[in-house]
Length: 275
Image (cartoon, rainbow, N blue to C red; front, side):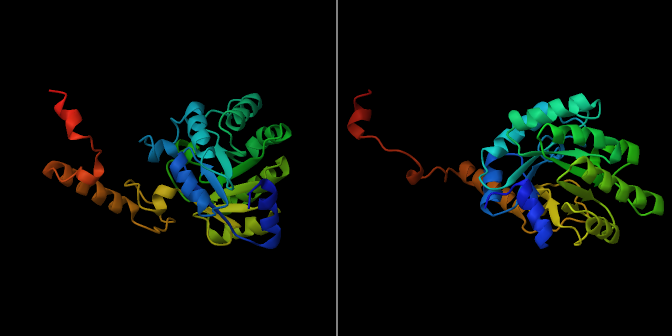
């Protein structure tokens, strides 16, 4: 069944859990879509897992459009959400609407995701008024790591916990159709989930959220960098790939590959006439 912002709202009403994974290319998106995952996030995490950056801050609008378009070509049923990269919306409400429009028009996303709390409610409101669905993102917002002093759990103190609640409500009031909560204590995330009428999608925010999202390279052990505590590894695809690469190298070195069945034949008389 085609996933839309309407089916997301219906899932919240029916207490049905929503699944979401990241993807950055056609072939991976196609596999995720065929597996029945509800939504694909084309995250600016591509900066780290695809482009090798230290963090997400260097990712550009062109990067996001390029990868989102590739993902869109591999999907039939998943809701495609494109990340708004650093400084694509912080500069002004106008810039936010223009760049969100590019992700929809050029990247063929179905919705966009914006990091930040109530300070960005005006940006979300304007984007929604332009008929573009917006997914919010609160808690640990990777584009703010310099302000946070690193990747840290958010909401442990009374002051910050209350701010997260206020932020979530503000995003809902601005028109967001869902909110991602990253690295938020489970009990707090559950309080926020129960307070909102729109779905919450957790990443390191406990089982009380309406859905979950993970970076796919993390959950299949393809990314050799830091693995967050909240990640569960469902397969060791990275090791399987490395073993395949090593076997290929070994067979090429020994002349085992390509074998006769991996090539194409030609009549001997044709070859003889070449001399």
